[in-house]
Image (cartoon, rainbow, N blue to C red; front, side):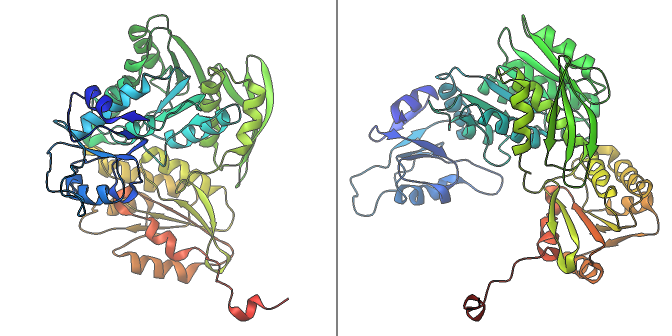
Length: 474
């Protein structure tokens, strides 16, 4: 709980109206609960200032605004002013407020970034740490200039650990986020071509990921992927920026502090031995794909530095649940199998999805939307994915394409004649329904802009509600 006056002071704002206490913070007027502070964000499509009256009527304790409004008054009391903290920029003020709140707590905090798998690693870390004590974790994929502060503002005295995810599409974003969060441990999972339009080539992306070290104090810890070509760069950068820092490495293919051996990958999960300091611990991970084993050893390395034993980590990984939209195995129509990997896509994550699909027997169908924000090399990246899928033994490929997604044709150039570009979701789902059978496995993936979940919704099997007559049957 914080007072409006304290919040106003921490963000260099001006409080209009009476002081009061708020219990939590939200930027979504639809989710305002009594006692919340509503922050009116000015976004690309919506302006939160338009919803001040709604927030007040739902019981908000006050609002943070860039324009003070006297018009949003309760209808039954014209003398009452809805308390508002006026600031220059509500997004920046949200970050300032989160930084002030975070400074009240002294607990192990892990910050995670990477081109692929950061949400899954975050979930793994939260699951393991949650077996030892209450762990603060993001709601959904809260990894940007609004999500990270909102996560931090949820911290309270019951939390013993915290894990924060940090994403980026432009230089300086992770620098901003890590200086708000002030983590003790910073993990870089990997780097690959992603957000090329905002960050440039893969070397520039690697530099942007290294900004995560800027929030570490002396004695901070870096968790780094020894299999990644930028491992040596990150290690050197870390030691140049963090006094008395420590690096712990993880890997599958090279020597590292934390590794996995005796790997057995199946369609539903993997068994392996978690190797730490010469000891090996039997581990079962209920997520498909070898890439998730690498995610698991990354999470294990971070949790070790939070004081969790390797034995507890190995046992806890069995409790990890799949993240929605990330390689979720679902039942499809006519007893087919659907792999829902629709949350997002870049070349690295699409390859990982293809690897999982290739492990299944039967007819394997790949359904792709375009990969967004890849910059000048986008056409090549799409062709390379098509070729990769063909070489992996995928029999058919459908690409959702239109005038706004020209790179769908580039998939075809890489894959060959067994690939087809389809212009609408309706036509694509119709084609897929005609082919669904018990020996068919369909992987659906694409960037957020493609909204490939629309396809999954049409081809998965849903349980038919029981009729009144059925309910009476024994």
